[in-house]
Image 1: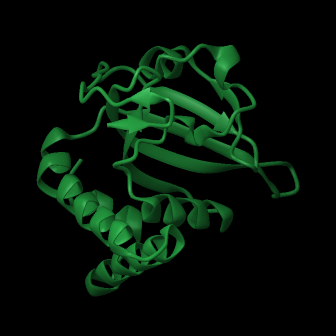
Image 2 (image 1 turned 60 degrees about the vertical axis):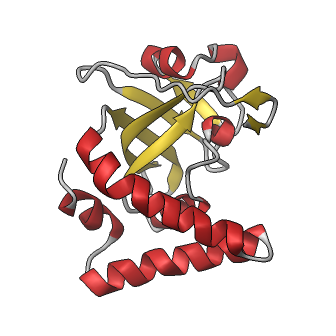
Image 3 (image 1 turned 180 degrees about the horizontal axis):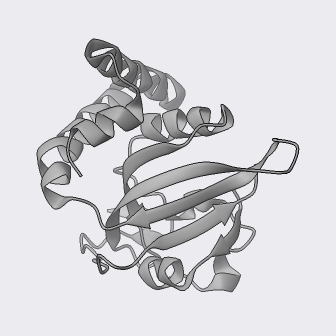
Length: 177
């Protein structure tokens, strides 16, 4: 499958449990910092990423609705936890358990975003996240436009959360870590 200019390989990259992938973005989502593990896992060099939209590593099997929920939560000044599948420069993929927070200045204004990503729980991905993401992607792809698909997928996610009477991060933690 071709995604952007990169052929998806179907190969999963794994990183060590002791490693933490860190990146920071400005308010527009452009990368302002990445640690060595970020560059090592993604396959990008620092000069290729700084100033570029963080969605450079977005994998096409990651539902847009989850990112919509992530960004709306961050803009409210709240942190969020999520399982994310990313795409490496060469088309490989890698799963992460992400903790994303807004960064604030001394006056309490949001100045950017900070993400720490760890090795995810494989059992949670296989039993819960992959089936959920496939369902959300099916909703997104069945709509008459990408925008409508994202809205319907987001609504399905919000309905799931309402059924359980929890927020998204609580839902993620309820699956096990």
